[in-house]
Length: 347
Image 1 (cartoon, rainbow, N blue to C red):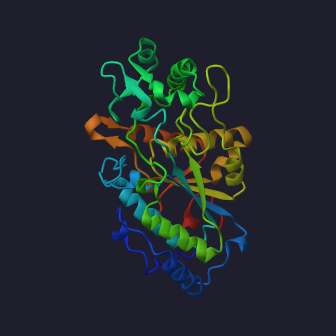
Image 2 (image 1 turned 90 degrees about the horizontal axis):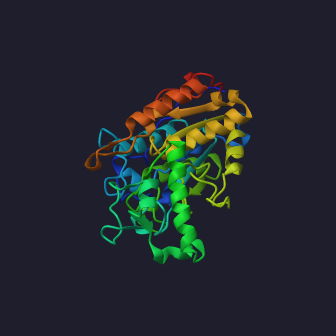
Image 3 (image 1 turned 45 degrees about the horizontal axis):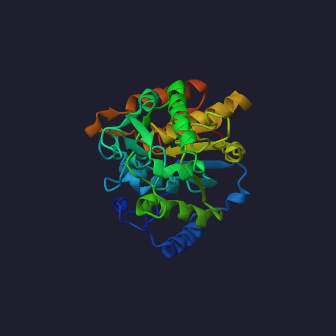
């Protein structure tokens, strides 16, 4: 199968990469119907080569300055530019991509990585987000503790909760992946910031209607006792008493690997994208290392967390991760140009 690079449909406007844009999905359906006929696009079910596009956490809170945790990258316009490029990639390769899955960070009011979960011993109030890192030693000293009003999270057992949070942060420190940084409230379910970026929701639905395939959504992040950067697993699975806190998303891993190729984009390169690919690679290496060659990472469709006010820049971590993925056999590519020119891809 030869890849025809399709033109961008007329309904797409890059100027709609803004917080308030909401596509008219009825118009999207009608436009996709005409597009399918004009360009002889076939249903995904008839495709011999299955190519899945996984787009991680492209939600308003991450992708616009109005959001509570904007991923501006070093350029300051990172996630906005990434969203435009990702939408264009979907349209240009509409007849090649057979399925899309969008992950959505999904949180509630009280979670272990939100200030609302904690009490600062010095002030008796919740600590500040983005500048507060909580260590296991600080918990042992009593500098920070879970809010006693949240004992219901541990079925009323506050002593258990105290032991658990010390164990949790110690586990983060042991693995060396992250420290417990308290994030601003973001992607709260029901809030506007939880919604997908309008131009990407438009693109995924256009693809869905044109290819007669459901656009899947995978939800993560609702467990109050653990972070869930990765779509494939939470950061901590077991409590201090060996009870199960959370489980891996094994079914989704299996589902993705049933495709001939998997393409990955999204936010943020330094956190949720990185964690997701790390875990995906771990599963691949355990199953068959050669499967890494079926994975393609769109490096120009993701940006890193940079918080100048807090002196935080996670770009080096993202760059180091990309090199690790290359070394493992995954492909780091650009969203522009024909996919048939990508290494190891046979269309």
